[in-house]
Image (tube, rainbow, N blue to C red; front, top):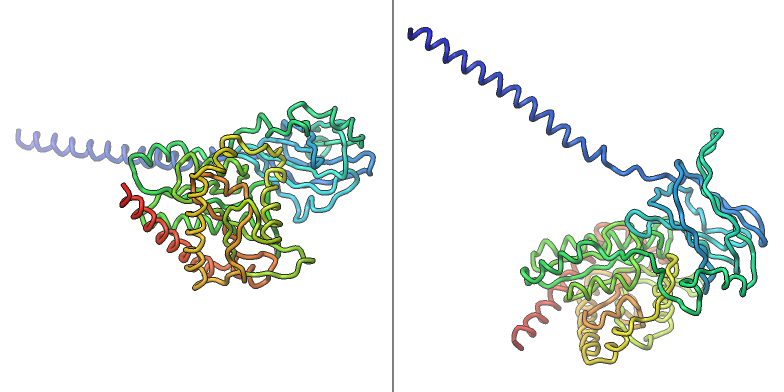
Length: 430
């Protein structure tokens, strides 16, 4: 009897082990399937492989080769004359330099991501023109699918009449149906801040997506400043002292006003915009980092030139420039704005003091001008040109991880010093 009971116990153990093995195999299979799932879910964006212009100053045709048909929307814009083509997100794999030269009615064109899920092609025109025809051809006879745009020369009055009412120059609003590109993280960040209590630092890598910024030696400003901004974010987050928000953390275009809205919506303690300038060859050579604050009057001609260039970012990406919102215009003369400018200038001096011991500075490192991205009336804001991509020595630094680490370290120290002093002052006044 005891022997039979012992056999039953052994048999039960064997069955339990077998069941456990089956469950383990099932778990491994399930885990493998779940790990493979994200790969299968990766979006398969259309690939654009070639683009070309044909025609003359009367009629010009643009052709884009693409591996699948896409929907699109094409509009004309005035002042300056442009054509904007919006498509779903496209992986542009065009040869280097595509679009830098023009033909016929097109001076040049640029392309890239303009918002998550959406890409854009912007054509700079030599003069007024209308879209005579636009269509997509299916792939056939060994040829890829094609997006075709046909432009035709018109006079100014005919051009203005052909514009949609919202795009006519006398109205000049922003494109009405362009979705806001404020990072989705901004809303939950604001709610978290109430419970968190740590100051928020907003880092704003300039340009992005369709707007490359300056380019030199095969490097684009948008990529250099994004790498710098991400490194600064990581350095600040390691301290645990701040909540750090990026206006963009990938190759996406963010309109200037939306960058400002991020800082204002989060009630940020500091807004730092990162750029890398370039001088036209005719203007000689310049080098070193420069720190800009907001001013109604530029500190010098170079500051004015840079502000004018940076303020055109929305136009570069095909957005019309809206007039300054009335609430901001009213606050610009308010005490809040003046106090904010004082804090901005104080941080700029903190930053210069830290950076000059680790990186090369411009011969006039503190400047000011009317940058639109610095116009948050209640957030201390600076724009830092970390170097000139047009200068060989600066460009070597900008692509160097060692230089970036030193520059990021000095900037993080300046943020520490400035915010520690400001928080202490705020605490003592309460």
